[in-house]
Image (cartoon, rainbow, N blue to C red; front, side, top):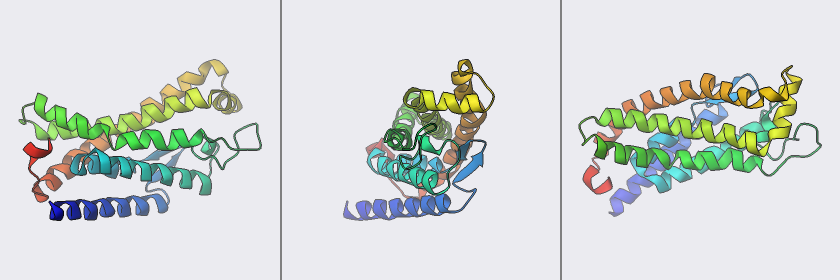
Length: 217
């Protein structure tokens, strides 16, 4: 048991180190695409959730949230105010603490949702299609990120986001349409990539760690 806990902590540190490296290297963890950043930083969180469980997965997700705040603060773009309370909200001279909700809460859930999707996916498939369960779990983590982040932006920063949309030459009526555009053009590809990488990496890691899947799941 002690050796297992030590190994989990070592693996957590490894995932965290990978995430820090990805977040610090430009165009790696956070990829500027228009006013928002695409990301693959959620992939280590998803993998960590499945391999290490929801508690350590949530910790990795929380760490991703802090990295998102740091990135938005140090490399700001027009919509960085939705991820950092230190960036002035459009039309004001101050930031908003609600940015921490957008940046952190969805990322914590990235570290929780895939574990349970994989757990119950394996049961549903009766362990006959483990790679399929891993793929679906990876997609669930990617969609958790995009759907929660974009909808929280809509509900918590609706007026400011509408102002940005208007500055871009679009009407306020197009506001949720802009949200849906990001979800379909950015979120779905991110989720598919997460699913493919999760299935490939986790299938190897689950064998290498020699964990008793019956006990874990």
